[in-house]
Length: 213
Image (cartoon, rainbow, N blue to C red; front, top):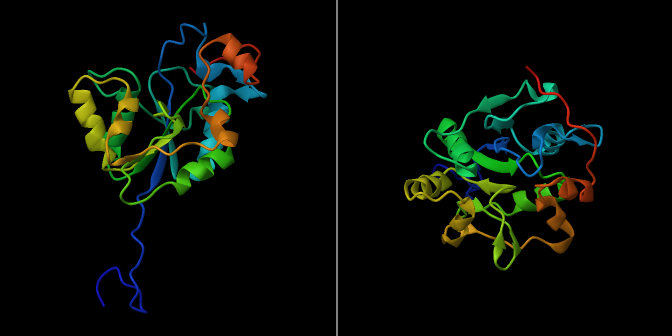
């Protein structure tokens, strides 16, 4: 019997790395006119809502970026952007450099329609040979957030940063990245908000909450 075999001689399934969530809270929110993380959504802030949705599915939730944080989220670890980088890649690489042994569920703080069904579907796509799961909303439209990046995907992100690539959606062309089509009934989970009109259409509204000091 070799290491990794069960007592009956069958091979044990490879252990998946721990899954952490990285919630990106950077950005200037210039089109929204207020920090997205603090927008009121269903009786709490939008960041509270996103964190509550992902927390049951991961071992730890980490905030990525310099944006303001509501009081309910001040207990969470925060990582600041990797130096000399911009956009989502800066927060994503900060997380993967901090815990290179972990897989990361990266999500933006402005995705109010995240659901357990969507997260369960996403988690079922994981497999040892897939370095990342980057969902595809349409044949030519991939979503690099609300996506999973296994430890080997750090190499793809580091290479992209070295080449000056800001948008991680271009990683979907790599053969080690799996880009499954999202079922139609789950696609709203990948909707984000950039304007007040977007936010109201997806069920938000109200004044932004104060950040913790």
